[in-house]
Structure formats: structure tokens, C-alpha cells
Length: 262
Image (cartoon, rainbow, N blue to C red; front, side):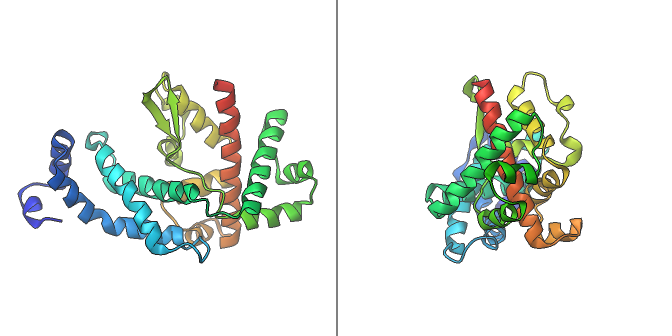
């Protein structure tokens, strides 16, 4: 980052200035300052990817997320830029991975089958379905279901930038905006008019406790699967399973809600 710029003003002052002026010089300075963050996030994502996915490609994808974060960051919301940017960078990487269709068709089909089964079953039951119930609905044993979950782990990508529009494109809420610390996951503190935000938060809150905790620790606290495993005292592969089930379950819940809204 340009030393002269930061000799004259604090970073907070520069963000406020950039919000008003959209100065290309400031934008480039922030890009240089936070490029290491892009590499950090890309490195975390790369650890769970197959060998065919190149680290440098993930860095390139993440740069789009950093630029988006810089352009949209609001310093007056009292959220640290690093916290805000990590979500945008990871979301941009996942979005690009999905767009290039890197997942084998057979794995993608199995992932969709699980997601659809969960959606139908939970809509019928009116509650969260157990692993045994999902397995039964798919006509397989619970052990086979767990093995299937492991096979699709890392491919059932939940994009935190998935946007839900309320009314028009100027009024929208992303899933990433709603995965916050456990103390913040309370619909009562959400302004009543933000119906979309409310239903997304409810869907997250309805997840089984361990699955919700994995989402919070991974997306909000920015822990790796290994670190989450140490927190919850389970294996890294178990965390991968919980993460995959949480993603599939949340997708199915939001799909059902979206259908109800539309």
C-alpha cells in the first residue's frame, strides 16, 4: 500500500474518503493491502479441493471478491473490512468454481438427490429430518448415506453471495449477511420489514445444533475443518460431513421457503 497515503490519514479515514470519492488511487491501495487476505482464503479453500483445482486459479477468483468487497464496503456499519471481505472473497471463489462446473456429473446428481430428498421429507414432516429418515427415503442404509455424504463433501458448495431480492434489486439480502455469531442469530433483533433476512435466519436456526455451529465457525469465525474438529472434539472428516449436510439441508430449506414466497 502507498506509504504516503497512510502517513497522512488513518485507514478508517481513507475508507470514508473512498466511499465518497471512489478514488482509483485509493482502490488500488486497498487492493495491494488486502491481497494477502485473498491468498489466505484461497489457501483455506484449496485444502478441501481435489488436486485438479489449482491454488493460483482460486487466488484469481478471490480477487474478484476482494474488488467487490472494496467497492461495496460501508465503514459506517462498524464492521471490520477484513471480516466483511473474507465472506465476499470466499463467495467469489465458490461462485466461480460452480460456474466452471468442476464437479463430476455423477457426484453433482447425487448431491442434488440428497438435497431434494431432504426438502421433500422436511416439508412433509414439518421438522428437521434425521440421517436415518433421509437414508430411508433414499432407499439406502444409514451407513451408505454417511459414505455418500463423504463422497460429495467439498462439492455441495453453499454460496454466501446467493442473493434474495425483496421487491426490487435495490433491496436484497445475501445468505452471508445472515450467518453471524450465535448471539446475533435472533430474528427478534431484525427490523420487521426485512422479511427475507428473517426467513434465512430462521432456516439457519432450524439446522441441527452441530451443523449450525460448523457453519458459524467456518464462515463467521473463519476456522478450518481441523480447527473446528478440535473445538467440537471430533475428527476432521466428521466436520466435513456436518458441513456438507448443513449446506444441503440449508439449500433445501431455502428452496422450499423461496417456493412459498414466490
